[in-house]
Length: 177
Image 1 (tube, rainbow, N blue to C red):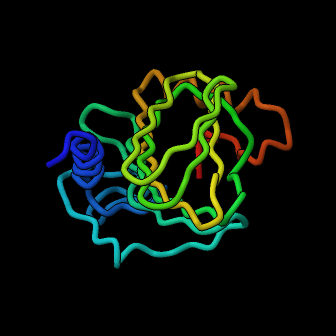
Image 2: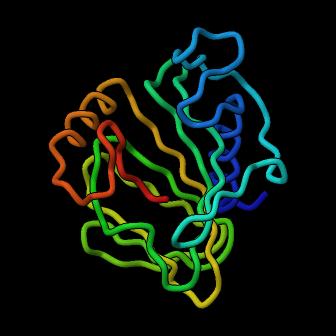
């Protein structure tokens, strides 16, 4: 396996090592409203629901606590040409983005770079970042969000303090979608 493919493959394996729990839903056999801790599982791309968005589409994979994280979240976004899901922003949690197909224009603290399939982007806690389709065809990318208990608490405080018009509901962190 080529070295530049190894990290994205490893990250996808980590993302897939959690059960199929839709965002904000409990797993079967848990108390209502109490999400079950993630366990190993496989996500079949062909079985992910496609959700239309104003800029393209989204496929939710998982959003639930793990043995070590307050929340582990992963989804796949497809943006139409020249679309961006939202303006650049920052938040306490960390994110990993893996480009599946197309060209993604990435902005980190004002620095812009275009990347293609197989590229991996890491957004550190509280650093300004954003993404946009940087090509003439759709771009599809995986998002992996990592929220430690500390980051989840900080994110909740940040969202509560966020000005109206951000599109975020109370308790909802804004990330690439």
